[in-house]
Image 1 (spheres, rainbow, N blue to C red):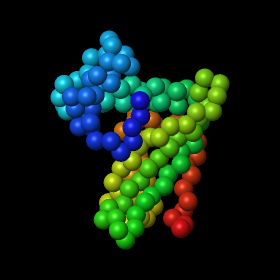
Image 2: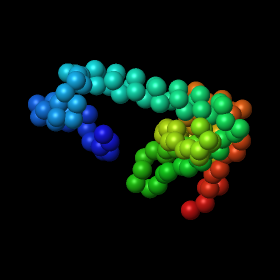
Image 3: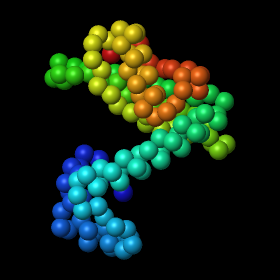
Amino acid sequence: MALPNVSLSVFLTQQFPEYAAALNPRFVLPTSRGGLCSLLDRSLQVIKENIAREVGGSAGASVTVDIWSGRCLKDSFIAATIHYIGGGSLKNAFLGLKRLKGRHDAKTVKRGYFKILNSVGISESSIYRVVTDSGQT
């Protein structure tokens, strides 16, 4: 189940266990915010490991990098997606979003990009191409 932009506290309401039980009666819901975060972190780690393994076994992957900033945003953000062949088919995944501090020069963008790659466990040698919009608007 994917519910974008929903606070984690929704999953800790009295009504949510009834909803979850209707979907899967054997699923045991965490009873605290920490427990819920741990469950999500474990699932995320499995996904990251699968992506890193598939990318490591592919002929080469391409990464798309973009930066968001604006007058109304105090901070800038860098995001990356990866595209690769895995199991005989084209796959893609969102690698992450990180806060970007400093000027948007090549050095800062590269540092943010490497932080995202490292957070997933993908080595730079697995990447064939990196695509950006060159800061164009």
